[in-house]
Image (cartoon, rainbow, N blue to C red; front, top):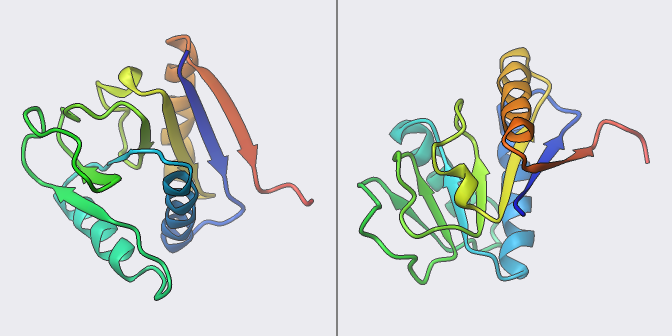
Length: 149
């Protein structure tokens, strides 16, 4: 059964979301996951692409930007693919969704990750995603970083 992880940050800036994204990707690649990052459009995909190349000087996050229809493109040697298409091709391991909508293919993934920041429009969107994921029978796990440790 698929699982969805909602990472709730105690931050409100888009840059904090990107920083958490990179740390999540570092951990997931160390664990051997193939990652598909879904974005809303080509501009957002390019922003993520640029960010991952410059994230940390000591970090290397091998990835590719997939700007074409990926239905005929197999998973490549790069463990990270960034796309915005309605089709994720043969990807099915870990989906990190940064789009405003849940992609139509999200149910084919073993794991789904959503990164929540304290921005009203992001909160509203991801509350809708949470309700839809639960309605579809996917287990949803909350990782609340707002709470003190």
